[in-house]
Length: 247
Image (cartoon, rainbow, N blue to C red; front, top):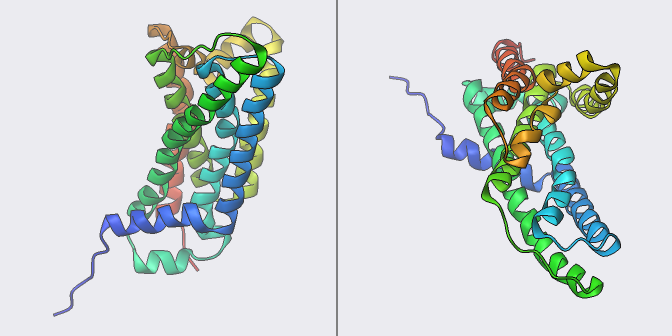
């Protein structure tokens, strides 16, 4: 009788998490992310005199909001760009489990990145207050904090979705980085452009979530943007990965 060895999902998750941490690309990305976050926080804290913990943490989050989705793209396209998909999907033929194991560490990294941004902002808040001779603001409003974290996770999910959809890292990265500039142009086209951006641009639609002031209308606009940039691309991307011939 032949038995099929089932790889535990915890093993897949551990392997994909290790890939996220110890490959050359991930090490470079992590270093760039840390350096950019520190530079942004130091620049805003020391040169503008900002001594507000949440503001400085949010400043560090700017780098994370840009680079984490890129890391997500590289994670889900790595099997195809490095031509290791045949090995991976031979060892684990159920491709959906592999995709889930690739996505979860990236989404978890987005949450941990927000925590890291807060930790970076703490000493800079104290230093900025001391240098500028102003009182530091340590208070954190839970609604904006959770909204900021959720927005960071959505950005990472957008990168994952774009990577799955295109299965080509350069193309996905270019589209992800160019799209905000295109929407910035669209918003200048008048009321129609502004309305389109409110409903279809994920960055614009998530502003209320970031501010912790989301109402019913804001939630509807955010849901529409998430559907366009996360749900639909990811669904199509998953189907592409599940059906793609591996040679």
